[in-house]
Each structure stands twice: as structure tokens, then as C-alpha cells.
Length: 488
Length: 120
Image 1 (cartoon, chains in turn brown, green):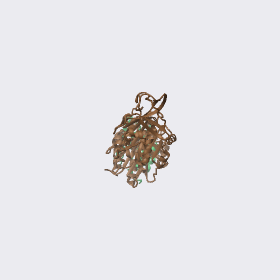
Image 2 (tube, chains in turn blue, orange):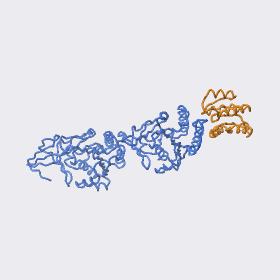
Image 3 (cartoon, helix red, strand yellow):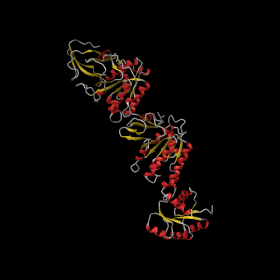
Image 4 (cartoon, helix red, strand yellow):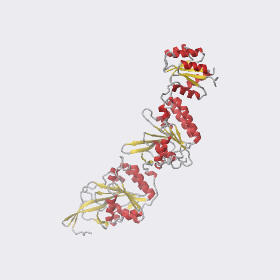
């Protein structure tokens, strides 16, 4: 198995199943400002390049400008050799141009000689060339160009270098020929609603993560967020039950929910869905396990306040590292970036319960389309990693026929816990109460009765099966109770 | 050096003379530029001219007199024109040119021509 050459960007190495293959030539395409040069800097200065000799051949920007740009991103080009073939100001200032020869013919030989000489001097193992398109202007025709590029690449590769070269494709100079010649092609593209993306569209000799991945250019360079490929990630784990700590709820769940399953907690606004989820986390914290909540609508402080009032020691849990609460601002992340955040929590911080509150917030807050597919991939990943996923799903109607889910994602769920409002006719009084039940539970049996849920300063309590209900799933459940029910 | 044959480039653009000097100089040829009949005379006097490259574009009909002069001195020459023209070819041939070429010249073609004439 060949040793891979790191691109200097962790997320991109992941897309390329470890990095570039050594001794090959790769084409980097993208429009102006797409980030080609930034990627080049990472490639030449990135990790794993110790003991390597990087060479940057520039036909566009002068050396000092490029060094300054790299420095402003915190990338150190001290060990990078440069070959500056960029047009000098003298070229412009020359009063007359010659017309006796074609400039391409005149400049090609000295340019080639300079490159050969520099390459032989430096003996580079990594070369970034920006851009190959400029060579087109040194060739008399397309056939010549192709021959020149091929032989140039062969010259470089014969010296055991890994080469990344850029192209500035345009309508009058399409770069199909360069794509054929390269061993791999990386594309930088801006997609509406998604923003910057990076994709490998060709990569001979290796598998790679297909499709477009989110990318960001920041003042520290380029970051790549590979789309989640759930099948690539599994760990062995014990399929044990985790409890909510709420006696009645654990009863109807016949013990609890299983690790590595996805549970939808569904119900109208204010009924207590998040609170139910947090009880699983409280139990997990007592076991020393970490949980993470991603809240899309509610502010973190508000959620913390509410939770403390129902007896969940959130601040203590946060201090101990058994709870992390992350508010996600709208349009802050692309789905790929969000997925990478979750991965870090799971893989680096050993999170074992992840809550997304709520799914409509998730849909509205993340950029891009096709979020159901992303959520599906994320759920599958979390399942494979043995994480219990809690998806909070808000139903629009406070009353009415039971809906499992507003988002048509119920197929994602292994378990569905539903909450709803009920009318209780106690004697001649009518009260609004809360009901909780289990609609679906893979992997084990469950209790099909509806129970009353009471939320107070003591926490959450789930009572015995309600008797005298006229309906569970239909319009507002009503029960008639002839005996006085004491208010706890 | 004075007895080594030089190439005489008759051209009204110094940039053309410079690039000829660069390109032909790579193979060790020395190029002398001239942009008038007077400068041609000086060059003929001071150097042993092996080949003439006469770029007629930019000159009037008086450039043909330069061709006559080179023929008198038995210096083989190439006529270079801005574009291909049967009339120019005819005129150039009748003045005794070794060949007529239009711009831009192929570097290899020019080299082949110069080499063959300089070796005589």
C-alpha cells in the first residue's frame, strides 16, 4: 500500500482516503478566488512535508506576493523554493513588441530551460504549479500543448515528485485535455445555497469520497468538511438499554432505549419533549457518560434555566464534562460542517447521547437543500457508533389527530415516544393534562398504553396507564375519571 | 570575432532586431541591426556579412535598393514581409533573394535557412 502524500488539509485527506498518491500529477480546477493557491500553500507547507523539498512554480503571481499571502494565513513558506516565471513589469513597459516571431515560440524554450534548471537544482518532492493554462500560450497549437504538458509532467514525475497543477478554465480555453492528462482532478466550486465546495472528480488508483463537500476559506487557510459516509465508521458496542430515570417511562419502554438507536420524541409546543430527552442525559451523566444537545431555536441559557427548574443539574453536568450544550445559529453551518462537529464530539469526546432540538430547527438553520438525506446519513453514522440519538420533533397542532412527525422522517426512527395534550374530566372539572406513550420501538416490546406525564419542580413523573380514555390517537384524548385524582 | 560571419537584420523595429539577436544568439550567431541604407553600408564595411534578413514591412520601395546592394556584394538574403503576397514574392525573387517568408516566422524554419546559408 503506497504511502500517501498529505494535502496539508485534514478534511481533504479524508476525502482522498488518506491523501494523494505519490509520484502522480493532479489537476486543481476552479474559478478566480476559488482557493486554488491556498490549497497549494497547504500542500507545500502542510504536515508530513518535513524532509520534503517543496517547489512552487508560479506563472501568474510574483513570488513575494505569494509568500506574503501565505504568511497572512499563518502558513510558513520558509522552506518552500520558488520559481517565479510571472510576467515582470518590464514586459509592459517595453515600448514595442516584436512581430517577427510568435511570442510563444520565443518564450517557450527559455521558460522550459529555467524550469528544468530549477528542478534539477532543487530536486523537489512536491511541486505546485500555478497555472498550467499559461503554458497554453507558449504552445503553437492544441496538439503541441498536449505534447508539451505530457512531457513536462513526465519530466517532473521521473524525478519522484508529486505534482499539483492548476488550470484557469474558461470558455475560450477549456481544460478538457488537462483533465485527461492528470491522474486526478480536484474541483473547487461555489454552489448556490451551499457556498464553497470541493470535490474529487477523478482519482486514479484509489477510492475517494464522492460528491461535493463543504469547504471554507478563512484567515487561517482552507478547511474541508467531508460529507459523512456512515458505512466507513463503526465501532463495536454493547447493545444495552439506557434508562430515562422516569419510572413510568422506563416501564412503557420495557427498560429504556437501546444504544445505537434513533428515537423521535414528538409532540406539540411546550409539552415537554426536550425535558424527557434531558432525563436520559441526566441518567447518563450519573454513569459518567457524555451527552451533547444541539439546540437550533432555543437559546442555551433558556434551556439551562428550564432544565434546572425541573431538577436536572445541567450546570454541574457541564462542569463535569458530561453535558455539552451547543446553540446553532441559523445559516452558521452547512450540513457537512455540522456533521463534522458531531463526529468530533463522538470520536474525540466520547459522546454517547446526541440530541437535535428540533428537527424543524435543523432544517431551517442549516444551509443547503436535501437536509433529510443529511439527517439520515448523520443518524446512520450515530447508530454505527453506538450513540443514542434523540430527535425532537415539534408537531404544529396542539390538538388534533396524532401525527408522528411533521417532517416525514419517521422512517429514520427506531423508536417513537409521543407526547400530547389531553382533557381530563375530573368530576365536573375539565383540566388540560399531558400524555406520553410509545408508538414504535424496534428491538423490543413496548407498553401500548397512554400514561399521564407530570412536570414539576420535582422533575418528570409518568403515572400508571390512564383508565377511561375515549381515544389515544384521535382528536384530543379525553378521559373521564369518577374518582378524585389527587394533585401531586 | 571580426572575421566571423555575422547576420545582418534590416528592420525598422528595434524590438525585432533584439529578439533576433536573442534567438539566433543562442546558437552562437552574431546579429547586427540596420534600419537604413546608410547603416547597411556601415555594416558591410565593418563586418563580414554571411546572411541578410530583410524585413520589408515598415520601409518604402527604397528597401529594394538594399536588396540590390546585397546582391552586388554576393550576400545571400531572405526577404521577410508582413503577409504573403504573390507580388512581393515575384519582386523579391527578381532581386535575387534566396527565399521570401511572411511573419511570424517559424523559428525552426529560420534556423534551417540561416544554417544552410552560413555554411556556404
